[in-house]
Image: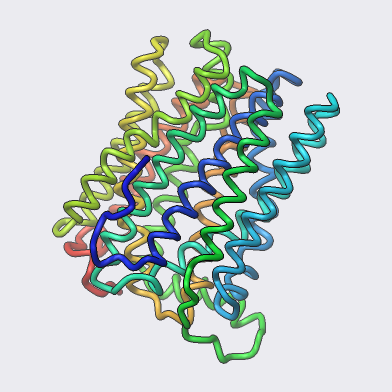
Length: 407
């Protein structure tokens, strides 16, 4: 089990938050592995695998911005706990339906919508709560530590889910439920830390203030949009069941390993960044990392060897971790506390678009071109995005230190 004491300056409440994120994310990954494999078993369709991502993205797109308003006005622990409870509902429904042999595509899509609602609440809450639990000078280390533990979950969750699937999908769902219950208990144990209340009345202007703020902060806009388009084009998570079953000849365990590989690479990089935070050339390193991510996805697409595929995904995950840490730190450092919920909500919308909408893109393109061509096209697109963003956001590319205030 990973050690929580990454720094003696981290508060007990932050350590409890780390446990919450670790267990909650592991549960989420277990559920995603199981429902994706069930869907591909039921339909054998790349289109349906892409729809799994779209059904999560639509509610996240619609409700994340209002959730950001809620995060700025309510107890962030309660919002985070509600998100975990919604995922627990999905786990119970899928588990019971599996036991009764009543699982079909429509039910899986419905539970994807529930999980998308959970994401709408969870993302802005868990991002905005961190600056209230650690000192400002510790934010880069805190985000690196949090992201590292997240990768433990993204490694262990799919592998455990793939292993447990051998005993039945219901076992995976109920194991995920147990993780979610414990995660919720850790949320309840976090000490309430006052945040600056948003005093302006609820209005369309205050609701979308996060978008206006990010538009003015060009370096933040560049970092968020770079991650959006890089992962939107380069991501191939939705196609992993096809790669595991049809291209690499593996079963559910192989799918779990493929889903875990990017997190393994990210874990190595995250541990390094937690111990040695980025101090110089942060912008340049982020752009180089995005380019490496694009190349790794092209290699993965063309690979027919399981080991090489795992290595390519791991390298891509490690490169993506650099972008994650830079983006999260920029967003939180350059945002006043009374707007962190709304700005984090916008960030969450972009992340959701890059992940779930990226899955839909991959599935849709694969339905017409096949999984290999779809992934190669995405990798090339990521490289083009990195080149265009260097020219479009030169100040971001030149940013040296993360702790400096950007424009």
